Amino acid sequence: MTYLNAQHSRSPMNTAYTSNNVAISARGIRVSFGHRRILDDINLDIKSGQVTSLLGPNGAGKSTLLKLLSGEIESDAHVSYFDIDREEWEPQQLARHLGFLPQHSTLSFPFLACEVVELGAIPLELPNRETKELALASMEQADVAHLAQRPYPSLSGGEKQRVHLARVLTQLYLAGDKKILMLDEPTSALDLAHQHNTLSIARALADDHNTAVIVVLHDLNLASQYSDRIAILSEGKLVADGTPKMAINSDLIEKVYGYKTLISEHPERGFPMVLPK
Image (cartoon, rainbow, N blue to C red; front, side, top):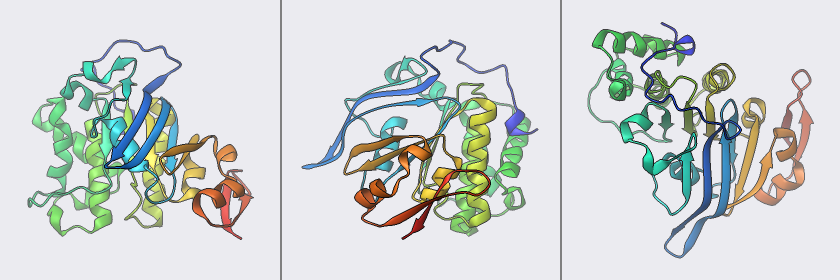
């Protein structure tokens, strides 16, 4: 069983959506903690079949925005998934279509790694054998199948991150072509090869299965390489939103990050690369 090629007839949502393939629509996003405005009047549409990266310096509001879009943070903003208001979704139904990988996952129970991945199948109500096969396929995809029988607490930070990626991939197995994958700094604990493997998985899901992928990253070059669209936040405001070639420029980077850079072009693939000046 290969996750990227998996199809299943049990998907609970068959209603077609037609708003230019918009998977997430959010209007009037405002978030304040005390007297500090974290997000300030942001409107955003996230389309299926695209990888959208959220960039910005520390404290810009990236993770807060992702949590709000996922429903983890409540607000007065209007958010809909596939043309259906968030309030109309039943939690278990939404869990089959929206997978969220947080920046930090706290789990102290001595589960085996494979058991952690199998938790992703809880909303799917699959037979036990199919759950185990699906979990193993997801672990192979995330390059953690060799860790299946290891106690989860014994894993390194990067191994835990990849195990949770496999869990989220398992969760989305029945989503059909109505998938939303949200990743909050999924490469933060990973080595070079696994950074690219994780983002290659996200890229393949967008390309091959019409998944709407939205990912928080700090590495501008990784975002440039794997994204269709880059949205840059600064002090809670959306200051750039476009293709990598549109959003990645020296003047904006210096203004947002306070750091001078040179922008080059990858010699073979053409995406912009950020270099120190």
